[in-house]
Length: 365
Image 1 (cartoon, rainbow, N blue to C red):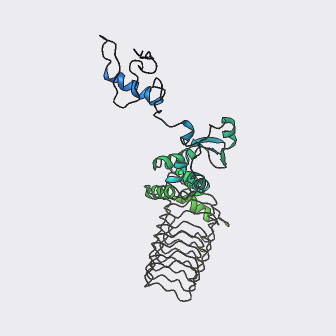
Image 2: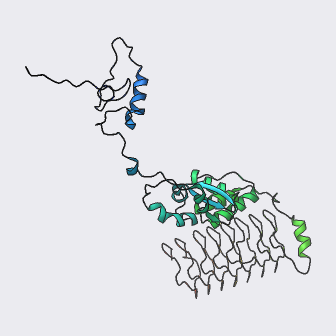
Image 3: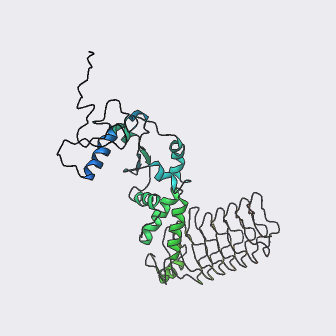
């Protein structure tokens, strides 16, 4: 008679504890005779909590999850120090909505590389690795929220303009367009509440020998028909200011951005004025005189220049996209590297104009 050896079942290996998942899919829980069956949620919880991590499973069962060394590390936070105020975000946030921004340009090469599996970095070292940018730390929260949600916050006019300067620095064109549209759409009637002077104040000032409005906010004021020749408006704010029939001969607007967004300058004289980099987007410039005016890198998108005289004007690098140039005199003007794409030039006088390097794709001639 041959003796047969029957190994004693091991409770930990052959009979997992109650509620534990076995190695075979669909295996049932082993219940003691007479024991009540556990509720379905208990079986589900046990299977996903213990079985997924391999706790209580037979020693020869493959773990449900791959080893930690094979798993990609979660995206590391990008730490920013904006003017002394610290922010934590992700590379995706900084690169997806505004891929051409200053921050995206710095992060895109790193963001495209696969994330290596590595242990968490020391918090102290992370603080040292924070990217420092010398800008307004308080306003950057609005910039970051724009990158996350694509929405600009409702802000007072002055603060909205401050945020616009931040957006321009970071080269966030979507936010710039949103803020410019909001500023242009503001209902400014008569004297703007943000204006620092009234029309009467301006009239008194121009009676002096030398008039200077450097850095003064004149937004929304009606300055039509005034003699403002040789007045210094450098660094000023002139959003929706009415200059209709005003004399701005040799007026100075500085080399920095001067706001004429939506301004009415109909039939105004701006001969030889310095309007370099000025923002004249959507401005009404019908029959204006810009003889030999410096308009280098000026923003003239959708401006109405019907019948305007820009003979000899310097428009090098200016953006004239969507501008109305019917009957406009551009004889002898410098339009090198100007953006004239899809502009109707059929009734524009261009004799002697310099067009080297200008973007004329789709222009009607």
